[in-house]
Amino acid sequence: MIRQRQLTQLTEIETPFYFYDLDLLRETLAVVTTLSSTHKYSVHYAVKANCNSRILEVIKNANLGVDCVSGNEILKSIEIGFKPSEIVFAGVGKTDKEIVTALNAKIFGFNCESIQELEVIDGLAGQLDKVANVSLRINPNVDAKTHKNITTGLEENKFGINSWELNQVLEKIQNLKHLSLIGLHFHIGSQVTDLSRYKELCTKVNDINRTFIERGLILPHINVGGGLGIDYQDPMNNLIPDFESYFGIFSKSLELQKQQQVHFELGRSIVGQAGLLVSKVLYEKVGRTRRFLILDAGMTELMRPALYQAIHHIENISYKGAESFVYDVVGPICETTDAFARGVTLPKSSRGDFVILYSTGAYGEVLKNRYNLRDEVQAIYSDDLK
Image 1: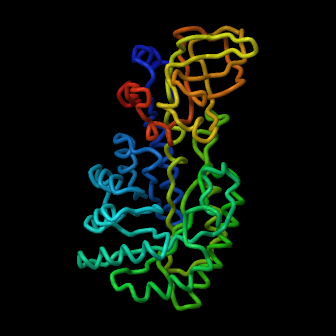
Image 2: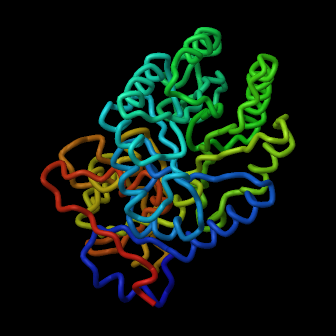
Image 3: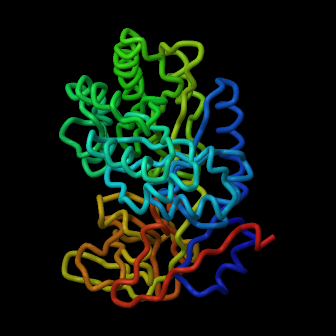
């Protein structure tokens, strides 16, 4: 987080900008790597959460693998220095170009989501005289109890192979000679805070894995996805998620063969709290029934509130008095949905005050855009302010 000695330097930088606490990121990674190694788990960082090069370099130095959902994410990960043998390629709509990119890079494997995708990968691998490692992404039909727009594990979602398709998939894959079936993949959603959801996932994983074992298929890799949430309401008191309880659920609940390795795909829980969006008050506008605080950051810099009503803790770091008001905190974009919070109590805020939006390290900068021909938001790093 921003330290007092850094405030003077930061207030001289043109807003808005992202600030990344790389020390907090390293501390979070140390917890993840220590606990995962204790259980002999393999962790892949979900690049979609934040593909900032400096962030990726820190994660690479922690010896994590990566979970990619596009060909460009694969190429960037290799450019940063991640080993292709530790890259997993997921996603429901992989293009031919992306599949060829992954095959030529000799990545660890593909998480496949349909029979047709298996056929396409097999065909492309055959043209290149290669064999592709594939895991079947099975839809466990587990409700993650999160926002409907970031739930992925229900039968009504577009993701994964449904359980009633398994017989057909296994019959088909026997005839696809350029595929090697190495594992099963599951993912129930994002920003999951009810850890009992993962216990239910383990039950489904056990059932499906047992079905494969009964068929004589002991697949070496079981990928349980990620999705562990962070505390957006009170970030300062919960900077690092409870990874001990998270990994502990899988350790206690999964029933695996000795030769089966467990993989995770963690994104938000690793980088979410390490990022802040720093903005400045442009105007205070008082209406008949509402008081607006208009910032110079908007949905072009932080899309999450407009996209799925996400909540971020907001703080005015300039005003030190006791007076406060109830504000709608909004941005300058020409859209009514360009609002960060409505009806939030903040200290009396004036033009030029600095305002921080916390917990923006995941799905913040990576979703930036230049709608209204806005300037592209820049990033500042704690390492550069020491």
